[in-house]
Image 1 (cartoon, rainbow, N blue to C red):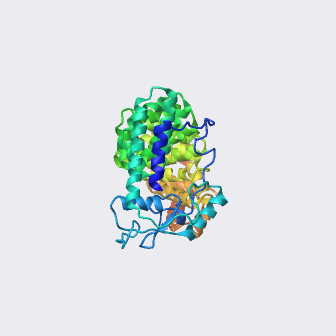
Image 2: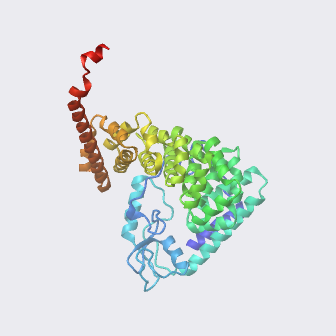
Image 3: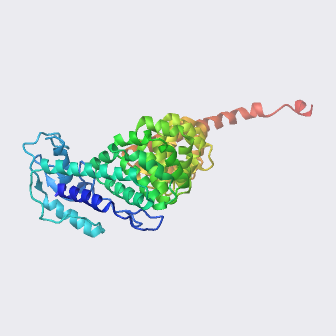
Length: 447
């Protein structure tokens, strides 16, 4: 079945060139119809692909995998269980019908469309030969599409081919590898400057899908003009979705340490991502803040991020985006604490987030406040103590937060107590000195 699907996909591309992309509203991604699909429960995800299992099967180790993913694993010459590392006695796969029925029920309840996922149809089959045929079909399809893209002179033909490349790159690391090997990245980059909103969106989304694979990250970063093209989309893209996917591509590329530095050194990258975090809709802000969080993991980048207004952008989004507090904590940890403290209302907003938010955002807010107190000193602690109800917020987090949040809240409480004791001691010392040092002799006053 896997080989047949691959063969049919290749035949479709050869006979009909490529599917005509659907016409949609410019603000909606072609695959989403305006709504994010619900996230599957962890037990329904394949340990290899981390995607919803359409055909769950049991390996000889007793672990469950999606048939397509474990088939590829075996087809690459491995005979071990991916999760446990155990050498398998055989490569037979037994359908996990109970789990499959649960997945189908979850799909129906959540309106998730599933192709080819009917209970009772799959049987144990030899996998290696079928997998090799499927891989070869995928390789041929990728090569054919990239060749068509390099030879396309018609705008409509280019749109169809890029749409098909995007779809192929969306499903599986093997497809991404084959498309990357065929040289797609260098051909997609110029299309990011297209004035056709659909073509631009498909091109940047195809690059995003390809960038998931580490080897493709290198290909994209080495493609001429790739970073500048992503900046163009983030700054002047035809749709918010294209801008969002460009920011997500920056996030994906920045996962590699050396590329994180290179991207952080580019003023246009930093400025455009900060602007998206400041002005974009919710989903765009989320990707932009995630990219800023990744870029701020490199100390060398923090100065440029602060100068570009990253802290202000994060503070403006802190009430609605949980990653905002994490960005502030990351900046404070690597040299941005004093800049954050100087922003009017920054400490008060972090205290408010420590009171109300998700577990992770409350934890990050507490971590940011602790870092501000340590790096910016008494001035930061004084601002924390000036916030009404901060003591209650600390005690509440110590009682209801995650383990890390409780530790951070306890550290913040200790910093506040030390500051209060020091302030009290200074006040007492000043009051004892006042009678002798504060009053001048009458003769001196007269003179």
